[in-house]
Structures are given as C-alpha cells and as structure tokens.
Amino acid sequence: MTIIKRLPPIWLLVLCSAIGPVAMTITQPAAGHIMAEFSSSYGVAQLVITVYLVATACSALVLGPLSDRFGRRPVMIGGLGLFFFGSIVCIISPSLEVLLVGRFIQGCGGAVGMTLSRAIIRDVRSMEESASLIGYINMAMVVAPMIGPMLGGLLTETESWRLIFALLALYSALIVIAVCKKQNETATRRKISSSGLLSALPLFANRQFSGNIINLMFASGMFFAFIGGAPYIVIDIIGANPSEYGYYFAISAFGYLVGNLFTGRYAIRFGPAKMLVLAMYPTVIGIGLFWALSSWMHPLAIFVPMFFITLANGLTVPNATAVALSIRPEVAGAASGIVSFTQVGGGALLSLIAGFGHGMTRVPLLIMLSFCAVMSISGLMLSRMGR
Image (cartoon, rainbow, N blue to C red; front, side):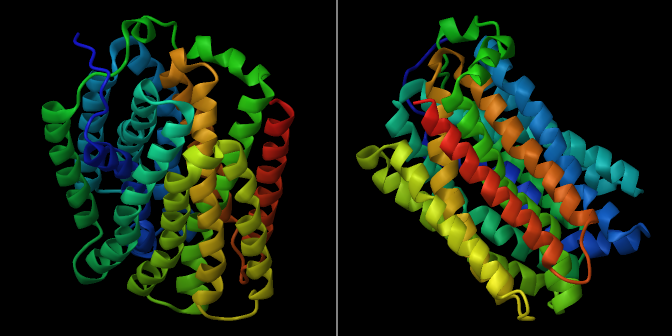
C-alpha cells in the first residue's frame, strides 16, 4: 500500500463528509407522507431518522479502527458501497419495516464519510490546522444539508418520497467513483497495524478528552433533538407545509455555515480552546430566544433561535473534534470513531425522544434543548480542568 502524506482534494472530503448529513436531513419533510402511506404514528415515522442515526453511531466505532488497520481509502470505498445498497433497499421497500432496514444499512455506510474525513485531515495536519480545515470543510458541506430538506420537501409534494432515496443512491455511486480516482492513502503503517478501538479506550480517563466528548455530544444533541421535534411543531402545530419547512431550515443551516467559517478563519490564530469558550455565548442567546419567543406561532420563532444554536455548533464541532483526535494521533481513526459514536449516538437518542415526546406545544422540545445546553457547557468546564 502506497502511503502519501498529502491531503486528498478538499472537494472530495467535502462530498464524502456531506453524504451523512444529507441523508439525514433530506427525509425530514417526508415524515408525514411516510406516516400516511404506512399508517403509522408520527413518532414511528420519525424512526426513519433515528434508525439512521443509531446505525451511523454504531458503525463509526467499527469503521474508525478498521481504517487504522487497513487504511482510509479501502474502508471509505466499502462504506460508500454499503450506503448505495441501503438506498436501493429504501427505494423498493414495501413496508415501514423494510424501509427501516434500508435506513439502517444506509447509516452503517454513511458514517464512513464523516468519520474518515476527520481522521484523514489529522493524518497530515496539526491540531490547530485540523480544526481550521474541519471548519472549512463543514462550512462548505453545509450547502448540501441546507438544500436537502428543501429538495426532500419538493420531491415529496410533487412526486414521491421514494425519489429521495433514488437521489441518494445516485449521489453515493458518483462519490465511490470519485474516491477510486482521487483519494490517496494517508494512514501510516504504524496506524494501520494498531490494535484499533481498544487502544483508544484509555482516552476516556483523560479529562480533556472526556470533557470534549460530552461537550460535542450535547452541543450536537441540540441539533438532533431539533430535527426530531421541529417538523411536528412547524408543520403540524404552526401549520407550515413541508417545502416551507425546508426553506426556513436554511436559516439554521446558515448559522452553522457562519460558525464554521469563523472557525476556519481564526482557529489557528486563537486555538481550539478559546474557540470552544466562545461557543458558549451563542448557545445561551439561542436558548434564551427559544423561551422568549415560545408563544409566537410562526416558523421564525423556531428557526431564528436555532440560528444561534447552530452557530455555536459551527464553533464547537470542529474544535472539539480536533482536540479529541490530537491527544493520541496514532489512533486518530479509532478516536474519530468514538467521537462520531458519541456525537451521533447521543443525537439519535435525543431525536427519538423528541419525536415521541412532542406535545401540543413546543415546551417539551425547549426543555430538552435547555438540558443539552447545560450539559454541553458542563463538558467544556470538565475539559478545561484536564488541561
């Protein structure tokens, strides 16, 4: 295996990283139509998102160590191929149960983009440079998840929700071709021969690692809880249609774009530690606005506060990830798998709770978001104690 200590094309890492978020957000507006076709409840229909997140989280624990042992490139190709197969299962699914099986397979493969792209960056860049690059990649890939709900809403309203999965199958097929042609191997032989996940488990004894994991998990958890509960609030309670939900969702995506842009521009100058402290401020502002606007029956009462939460996410995710992957760079793949597992796995649980726990008001969602904010800030405090 030829090892080239050179970063693969940024556009390729963007497309690989984006496949997971796109597959997650593009199905949001289709929940009601899936519910109607298969005669299920809203909470059960939301399993289309939750099952995908659970599969992504669990798969990351396996894909990261596998990439340490066998290399980033072959594992990336295999994961994307699995995602393609899962998309085909979703297209032809005759029942909700088969659809959920397809989404599980999709999630198992879709984890590869986010998990390995981070490890690839850390293979060839320092901690500060990794935070900056991850920020820029996240900023660039925001465009796809931003248009995902809009496109999903339009396909669902005008044709069928099954076309969503046909589009995802085409996307994954094109990315596999690009990876085969353009992605060089970046993992060194020392990393490839490492013992995998077990070698990264002692990291949890490190307060800086554990604190960053908690911070990242609950900061991202606010977004996942939001996507689990917001469609019901915006579409069923406020009365917006699915395509309108997609348009307003762009506001929250723009917040993530701004946060990642700021990270990409200033992470090297200020360092990840200061950037993580800065993220606390938009978090507090966003939670305060959620409660202040809780009686306003308009989508903006949901998406304007979420702008600040996703802005904070744009500051937190790349910087916390860079710190976590830099504590033991020789097991960056396994560490990235742990990061992805806790980030997405926690999000899956919160998304499930938000989907089943909604009421006739937005108060249950706001309580959950507030709890996540407190836990995120607590994780940050723990990580600073371990410095």
